[in-house]
Length: 220
Ligand code: PRP
Image 1 (tube, rainbow, N blue to C red):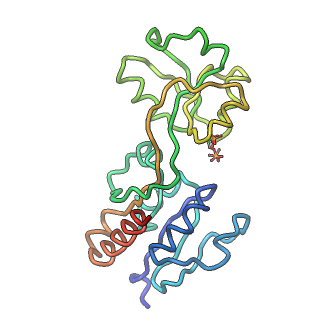
Image 2 (image 1 turned 90 degrees about the horizontal axis):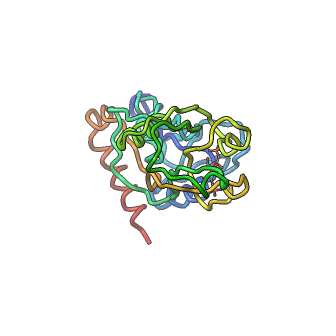
Image 3 (image 1 turned 120 degrees about the vertical axis):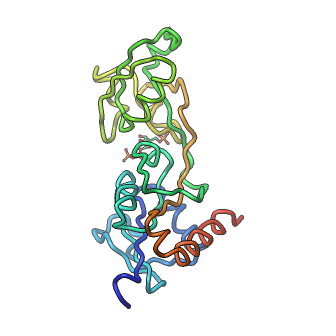
C-alpha cells in the first residue's frame, strides 16, 4: 500500500483511554494489544484496519498533529480545540466521552468573602490562557495568566495566585487542595477532529470515518 493511502489517527493519553477503547471498537477499530497498556513506551500502533495507524500523544498535542496534517484524524476535547482555535481543524462529531467542565476555582478562604462582580484585574494559573483571557475580557475583567502544564491546584496554596482555571470532573482534586469551584466556563467532551485539507483531498474515505465515529458515538 502506498504511503499516501494511509491514515493516522491521533489519540490522547490519560484517563480517557477507558472510554476510548470501547468507542473505537464500535467504530470498527481494534488497536494492537500494546495500545491498552498505558505504561508502554510505544507511541505508534497498528490496527485491524491495514490503512489506519494510531499515534498516542498528549491531549494538547492531538490538535497540533491534526492541524498540521501529521495526522488526518484525532480525538480532542473542546477545551483543547478552543484553546488553539486552529482554522485547519474541523470537529464534526461530539463523541460524548471524557465529559467534564472547565471551571474557575479559588481557595475556600477567599471564596467565602469574594464577589466576582467587583473584579477588574485577576491573576490566574491555567493551561488555558487564551480561553481564560477571552472569558474574562467579555465582562471587562483583565485576566493575567500564569501558564502551567499541570498540578495548577497547587498554585493558590503556594502563593502563586489566588485563582485557577482547570478541568473539573469529580471535584476530588479541588477538594483535596482546599479549593472551591466558583464559575463554570464551558462543558467539555471529546470530539472527533479532522484535518480540513485531508477532507478535501480524500473526501470519501474521510467522510466514511466521520460517519463511523458518529454512529459509534450515538450507539447506546
Ligand atoms: C485533570 C485536571 C484536574 C483533574 C480534575 O488532570 O487537570 O487536575 O483532572 O479531576 P477531578 O475533578 O476528578 O479531581 P488529569 O488527572 O487528567 O491530569 P493532567 O494534570 O495531566 O491533565
